[in-house]
Length: 157
Image 1 (spheres, rainbow, N blue to C red):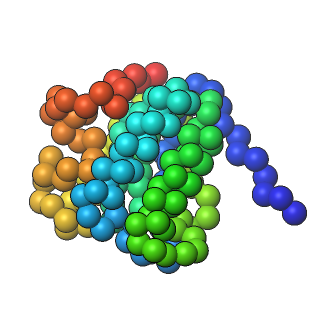
Image 2: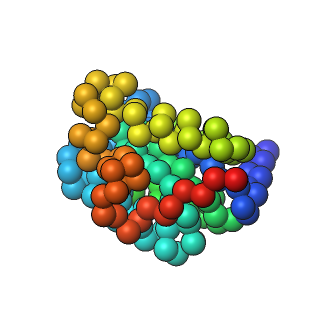
């Protein structure tokens, strides 16, 4: 029996989570993170994704995004990155643990909490002591006004 289609509302924001298969690292070095960010930018532009936050951890990713084409964008990102990873590491099998999760963000408080949760993930994981020290998150751009054309301004309801 086929899995049910996702219900993606066109003007809603979503917290998108993609986890690695069996908790294995999917980012081993700087080039891996850079490749994922290039793919994210490519599919952001292709499908008109509004991107409000991101954090790439060793074995999973978090995004906050809005688009009526979220499923297509995430499919493109995850499939393309998996192909790159398998080619680079001469590996086989599933890179990602099933489909990505999509949690609808329904109000301002949830949006603020979600952005904070995502961007403080490296601090909670004890990878850094301050969120601005982690290179693979939107924190510096979103909170400290850093330069990054991928990030869209957050609009609250």
